[in-house]
Length: 118
Image 1 (cartoon, rainbow, N blue to C red):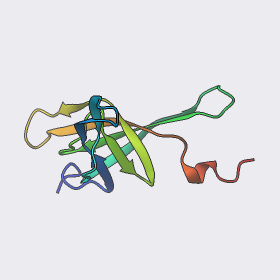
Image 2 (image 1 turned 90 degrees about the vertical axis):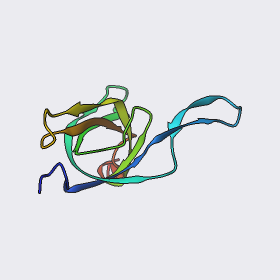
Image 3 (image 1 turned 180 degrees about the vertical axis):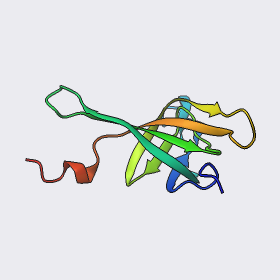
Image 4 (image 1 turned 45 degrees about the vertical axis):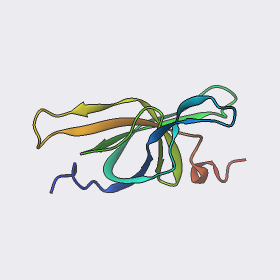
């Protein structure tokens, strides 16, 4: 069995829905129906911006056979919330190698990484 079919990392994708807010304005928003996806998650980078050292940008790449992720979706992984950056990329030339690559950005620093500083 390929890692594309059953990766070691479980992510939960909340596919976006077109809906109105409280003021009646329609926009794409993360939905409420979660989809479990087994994938391979690879860290891309983690950098602290120079704004008083208070903002952290952490990126990761998701590689899966199929992932219902889009640019307005939310992903839960590793006890964190992530946003999808851009459009997922469809890759592979044959059914055997076909897969989706998604770039995601964490919302804020990892809670355990920020403990004990002070």
